[in-house]
Image (cartoon, rainbow, N blue to C red):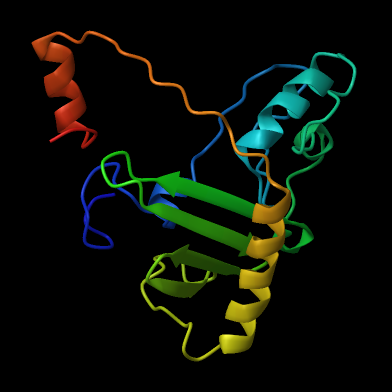
Length: 178
């Protein structure tokens, strides 16, 4: 984040500038040059996509879905309404949880103290529309409750590593440490 929402670096946020990341894939003969997938996709889609492209069996017990068919197709206009995606961040120092649910053109960001709603057609996510659209807030919040009830928490494990001064400085410059 570069102060779009008041922060700088890789802070505790779920705004577009930290969630929407390009996936560049080059595989001549398999992926058409210039292909753009306009639908919502997630990191959980990478493994099933690569497995299908490589001719491996469909991975079992994976929530993601393969995007291989979309990669092989002619570039098409965006079709973002097909699925609901979820994201979570936890502040390392504070333990504060932040959740987001994206469905169609709407994103709900939920933190302990507030809910924010954004129309994703407004790319900068500057105007919180929660007060104007309480019915959308409630619908997305209900989806988040459902997801959290069925999601399996990952076990946390502390890993101690040694960093030299140059590595610590590089992480500080990126906003990961103070």
